[in-house]
Length: 217
Length: 139
Image (cartoon, rainbow over all chains, first blue to last red; front, side):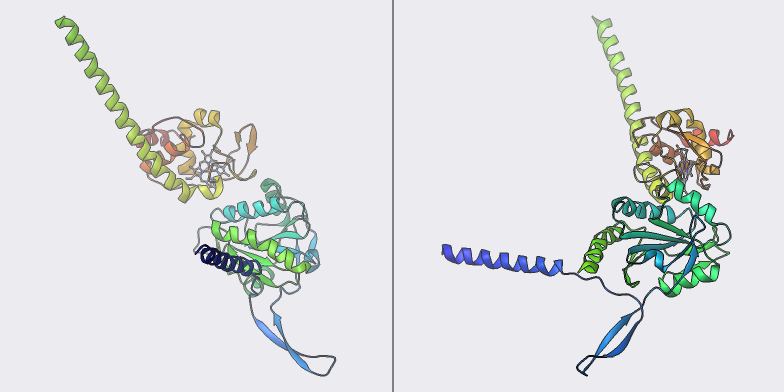
């Protein structure tokens, strides 16, 4: 009788442990379009590789009017978003949340942040500079990017998969989604989180370490 | 003896009236506070934060009790008309721009009760009538 019980407990414990270990191996998904490539191996056999969508080469100006490109983020995991400095609805919430990530990874150079302005009329680099200073995040870790309308809007909708638009019917002139996009060291999209939703932001905070660990192994 | 009884019951009645007024008052204040919190979450929390902590130097905190007391009659104007002149909060100068909110006096009163009784303040009730009077004197 007693042994029987012990056995049962052991079984339950084993199942729980199994569950935990499964969870520990969670891998982040890949977002966007996929393509395949057939590679020929050394022994003449062939395998099919999946090619995931990547962020294409870009060239923008940052808050110091310095050019930034993909190379600025080379080998980094980064969180990207689209905003404008005079946005008084969702942007303060998104940036309050991104600032938490900024603070948590202050000493980890492998994590960066990239905010693109969609207000090409008003948000010149010097306006972005002032904004970054007032938010208390001015420095190389968090880049604020300015570019021509076409460049930034195409990057948003085609590459980061965030919808942005100029809208004259909107009180503020622009409409955009508040997603925070997680990019890995190989420029692939690994997560999209509503930057105004506390649960989704918490998920992002859990996913960053996973991505950092993945790229190490 | 009779006099004493009359005096006692009289003062008892007065105290009762006083207390019931006060509880009616605090019941109303609590109702305003709760509604004010909902309005705050909907309209203000994005910038001023859940705990009224503000956001960097972009948005000032709502925790400066001295500022709140000194500017009590301006709060309705801030909410209704927005703010674009520099303000000094906790000794720091803020030069941001707060948008205007086209809200009814009752909503503004509830918001004011919330922000002047939450975040470590305790300034009591504020009525829609006071709000209407304040709005006539916006600077």
